[in-house]
Amino acid sequence: MLKLSKMSDYGAVVMAQISRHPDCSHAAADIADRVGLPRPTVSKTLKLLLRAGLLNSQRGANGGYRLARSATAITVRDIITAIDGPVAMTECSHGHGDCDLMASCGVATNWQRVSMAVRQLLDSVTLADLAHDAPIKLPVQLPIQSVALGEAHGI
Amino acid sequence: MLKLSKMSDYGAVVMAQISRHPDCSHAAADIADRVGLPRPTVSKTLKLLLRAGLLNSQRGANGGYRLARSATAITVRDIITAIDGPVAMTECSHGHGDCDLMASCGVATNWQRVSMAVRQLLDSVTLADLAHDAPIKLPVQLPIQSVALGEAHGI
DNA sequence: GCAATGAGGACTAAAATAGTACGCAATCAG
DNA sequence: CTGATTGCGTACTATTTTAGTCCTCATTGC
Image (cartoon, rainbow over all chains, first blue to last red; front, side, top):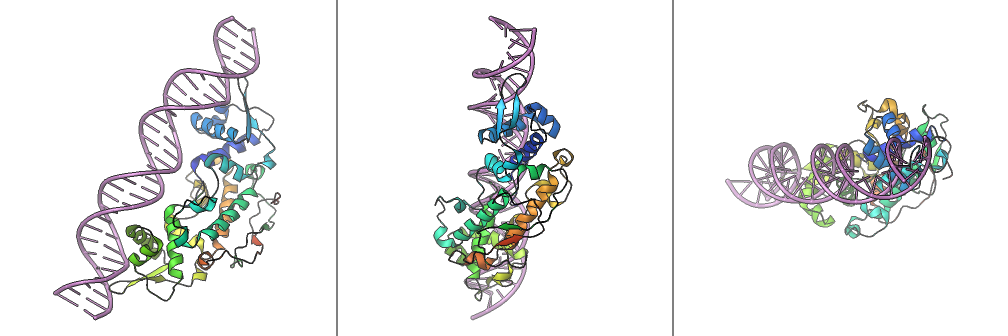
């Protein structure tokens, strides 16, 4: 399905929740209640986001989590990468030559280009965009630069 | 990881293989040998591609598979959809309102837009592009139309 | 009729994913 | 100093998804 893992999905929801009150400290249990997810799951998600440097945490009473930087400086790709690891369409897309079919498949290079385009697309959406209540207006064209996937085939 | 399933990956490789000789009939066992994959797996892949209308098949002696239409008229998204089902980033991205968090997450609408952009990106790459031996040249800008994800944030 | 080839389904095995539980560490309030 | 609160880390289990195999039937060409 080429879909996000649930954990990444949760990560986005959690981050959006925090970003709505960037100046408060958010306890894990509090966030869990607000988004309606089990606390241990939210906790696990927060830990991964913390480790990736997207959040800061404060222990002890009245502690909690807050954004490490502005919501406009955190991209969707940051969140996905923090939780699921690097965005790559196929095994061979991340560079390591551990696909023994590369010789016969003859498709690897172009998959890498598609992966790159997806990464750029995901980089162009910030947490601030995502957390907007309303669908984002302003239909501007969003150029995917230096992707070079041949002519645009009728999209 | 936001990665393709192996089956979709195989599907792309198999389709690329067939597209290199569009005028011949390709037996399943023959394709399997060429791409170095187990025959039953290839057979299963071919079946799914056939059912999606991407391939035609001919039974009996000297039978085999061939493309149902030109390689330039088959997109990467067609192949992925045929094997893994619709491309959707999250549960709620495909329209069915079977996510009971939609009310609290406040993020659904914008995920749908991201999914749409990914689908358009995948639609813009054809089987012919993928099967090119060399990386595709011609670095043109590829506009993702009507996506409207706010300003391009520095990509 | 016989051999080659695809079609379909049932089944098993393996891996990734999600969810849970529990104990330790740090901080703050009194 | 003590206890309450809250985050941190690890290990474990269950579930689901994915991958792979096998067997039998249907169709076609010689």
